[in-house]
Amino acid sequence: MEDVGIYRDRFVPRLVNVACGMKANEPLRERVCAGLSGRVVELGFGSGLNVPFYSDATVSVSAVEPADLGWKLSAPRRAASRVPIERAGLDGQSLPFSDSSVDTALSTWTMCTIPDIEAALGEIRRVLVPGGTLHFVEHGLAPDPSVQRWQHRLDPLQQRIAGGCHLDRNIRALLETAGFGIRVLEVFRGRGPAFIDTQSLGVVVSP
Image (tube, rainbow, N blue to C red):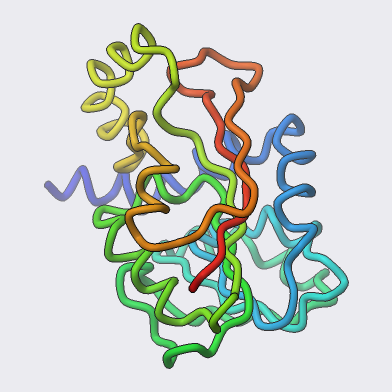
C-alpha cells in the first residue's frame, strides 16, 4: 500500500500535468473558461493549466487540489496570473465554503477521478449562488454501446494506472441527478480513441 501512495502522490500529478497539458486541450480550456465570472471555485486545480485562460470577469479563484505536488507544479502559472488564486481546499467532496458564497465553478477533467462524485456535485450546488453556473469539460461514457462495453472492461485498469480515473461515468446523468439545469452540453469525440476521448463540454445552472 505504501508503493500505491508513493505512485499516487509523486507520479500521478506529473502524469496529469503532461497528459492534460497537451496543446490539443488548450482550445477546450479556452472555451470552458470563457464564461467564468466573479468568485470562482475550481475543482481539481492540479498544476494550474487553466490559469492562462481565466476570463477577464474572473475576480478570484479558490483552488481545490488534494495533491501537494500538483500545487507545487502550479507555482509558475500562479505567479504569472493576474487573478488572485488561493488554495482553499483539499477535497471536492467537502468544500470549506459557506452556502451560496461562490458565483461560478470550474471542472476540467476532474469528475472522472473524485471518488464520491455525487457528494462533490452536491457540494458545488450548495456553495453556488442561486443561478450560479458550473463550467466543465470532462471525458466519460461514450454514446456508442460497443464503445461503452470496452469502457466498462478497461475501467478497473484505468483506475489503477491513472490515480482513480474512471472511463465510464455518465456526465450528463450525474449533473442532472445532482439537480443542475443544462444550459449548454456538447458531447463529441476528441482526437484520441473513443473509449478515453469522448468529451462532454458545457455549462449547467444551479437552481
